[in-house]
Image (tube, one colour):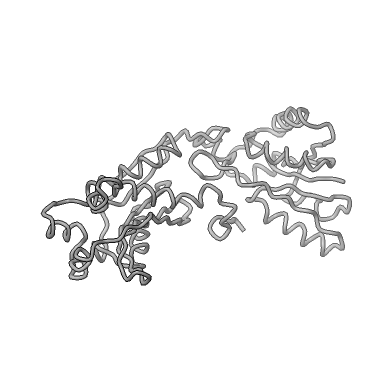
Length: 328
């Protein structure tokens, strides 16, 4: 029984260690295809560590866990994996899964049984982007995934409450961050209804992306619930990353008083409606309507932060969302 692993292994990091440990744990003889200097030079966008140094680092790691392995030069993406019948298994990352599937197609065409493919879970850096040698070499992250260069985040809003809510939640995920309050956007309405709420949150985020790592747009809107024939206020957060992937989160909702809904239907925002009825201005910049009607048991800031948290949920486990994150 033989298990295959391949790669350049320029900077040994957590993802590499999981890949190799998974191969060892199959209990088979492990063959590690280590790309040659010529291959790395022609296929990597960063200068690779010389082959001998990469091989020595691999040996140091492998010797801690196994003696049943060998390291062989890899001159091409497939090596001889599509022509040798004795191979049984291949361990790959999400990023290299496509190559493994191509190898199996070629093996079948050559009259060989396909390899068993074991795909390790995605390994993320602190900023929730994949940990990779190229990012380590560029100085963006450490081998452990800590961000060296600040994570650049743009928030499309004119409301300081939203900025603070975003900072409050993201500080629990990432320590090295910088923020821009982006205000150069125009939207068709200040008070969205129904499905327009999520659309406008995404439009906000798209307008502020530029070259930032993340761009965030947040909208609150009124949604009709036919079950009790009432309107509810929800916050939608849309997060777009530098790869163009969009994730959306929604806060819990609260029922909006009918007199406020009536004024909103006539063209006012919820804050303007509250001012008209109760004489308090800029309610949306503080605890919000929910703060008043809940006796400060809940605040708008907490609802905004909840929507931001929920928008990041798919990014914690991208393997569960292949339609958003699959490289295939």
